[in-house]
Length: 351
Length: 277
Image 1 (spheres, each protein chain N blue to C red):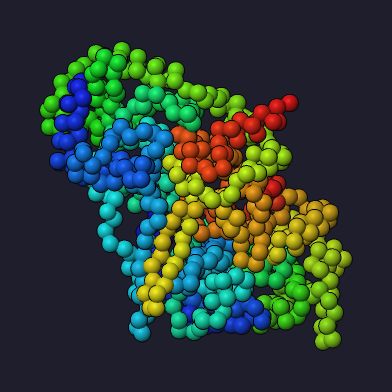
Image 2: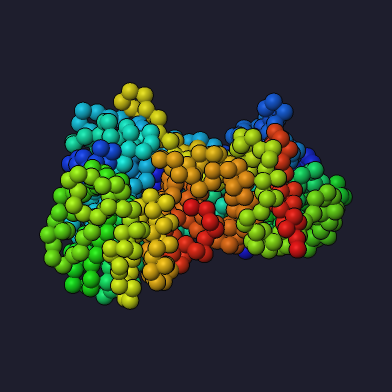
């Protein structure tokens, strides 16, 4: 793959984004009630590609909608007509700007589950048709711990194009995938200067080092993986989950949680089927008709949540099902932190 | 995924009221030629939609060796199954996705003695394999079926059980929990009859069992006590499932997807899973 590197300044970056918006369907963080969510935008004034990480929703809903109609059906005297819903609005060619590194990385984690066995072709099409531009954070937020996990935040190719604010006041734009190179080789970079990859490297490294030094939270994920994998029955899960009100918000804001439910709704003779986010924290998640429930207690559901993220998914797909974004902790109404949960459980069982 | 969640339409060909709370629905695909394309093996399941009410997971209760239809036996147990019982009749239409999941280890059981141990609605997945094995009877040696229900009225497939009893190549034993005036067969819970009456041959025998979780638990204990190896005890798990595609996450036991890696497991495999089923 050819790596394309450009350098520009703040005004040049604005022109870069404006050129993208002029020629492509573009999604960016849009503010509402003090929070940012990715929406389709036509102008830069409507959005903020540098929205604060702690207040920005993940890009997951652009690939896996929060609640989407799956099909429609009509019961007629001649029989039942089932039809798929209208064309998928998320499957068109599009560019996302202002994605956070952790959210871009989360999609690589999700690719594993969506592409094993039955291929989720809808998800795959959305992935293929999207170019992700991600600005590297300058500073970690209170609940961030991406650099403590099993991925290379500095060099990963989870985003197609990387944007870095250099300490020299310059802005560096660099492709990380073929799709990214193709976009940078179009006229969207006409206000930036092409530079050799090596010329940008020292400033990129410097920015990363300063970012990496700003983390409050640090953990040894290998140690946590190893310890949790040996634990199943422990009272620690009860003590760490005691305050949980089972609102499921943590799962709904998580960029890697992917559990969903299928529900049918009918008004008179017409109905729709929805696919919507669900969570293993729900008491009814595994409840069967007839009353049998393998996870009837809250500590069991929290164990599933923690173990799925740090043991089971890793066993099955080779990745942690957590990118260290801190969104669950920020959103939690009772201040439960996944970072603390897995560390406390692992620690509590230290021999 | 969205596309994979859209079902095919089947017509209800026949409804059989098996017990006061179990009905068997005999289904045929509405679309011409679809029935022939619908290939499944004993142990697999479908996602069954009563459109407007919801989608449920049911095992296929018949064998692909019986052509032109497939059966789902449904016990009234929850919201959707209650709707099915009250509103779904002959000629009505349902949505079907599948077949999903693994199947009974057909290669492993070939040439072996077979012992089926079923309880209540748990006979449904066994019936698929029983029919398959009857249709390939020469592939197997001794063929024993032990089936129990709470009362004689709660026994499924009464007519078919009579056929099995009339088939000289099968040994069929029935039991109910408490004595009834007209009942002449065994009385007692399944594990007790298994130990006291069936007294199965252990060597070269594969046991296939399904029933309520509590029955499976005690049946497996009895089988182990009798001397069966974990790998020779095969069961099929009841687990909450929705997508059937290894995506929606609710059938996970540890890193196992029951909808993909199961629902059929040997006791050896079950022992390696976290105790959460």
